[in-house]
Length: 304
Image (cartoon, rainbow, N blue to C red; front, top):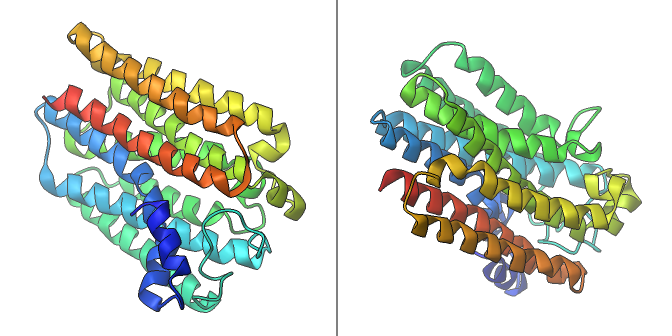
């Protein structure tokens, strides 16, 4: 489901509960949680250690955790006054009156519990200490926008994305299947995390004025929009460089595919120099698409 379709949902009259919950889950952003898991599974397949059940459990943990995070952001941003009628991005369910705050908080806790339950299932396939990884994920979901020091409001959102949409899901999805880590896995996890940071950068770039007005100190608010444009480009270039172990020993033709991907990222990056405001929703959608395309490119190189 892309942003254009969501806009149709919003403009199609009264928002029913089913549509409201779909919108609140923000399905157009879920590529960020799916992508590192499928890359890790491709690496496990290449190493001959791929297992279906832990792979599916890891995918469910990633999806439920991100949906819980999206619900939590919807609820806590409303409580903090960060979501207003002047919002330029996708309308939020609570702020728009589609879902009651209490119901959104309950949904957050239920979805997070489902992520934890799937995580507990992984203990049958790996070491007991992974429970601490699960606790860190749960804490990250809530600490991102809640608590006395919400990370997203204090310039740490980018670090959270690098960890929880790159390093943690990719490394530990591989770990529960292979029983260990490799340098290549870590480099690929950084590459995926950096590309996912770009999703957050576009979101914060678009919302610069509103975030600044409500005291939400994102990296864009702290360092400015010029920093955001440079950071986006650097992340894209670094991602392709860090993924080199996946293609350096492959046919030279594979190199051109990664060069083409970088060119695609450059075209998307140029959107940040165009009209701002809601027009950047298209850039946000394309950036999320690029994350998934990069993951699929890695899967094709690693698994075939």
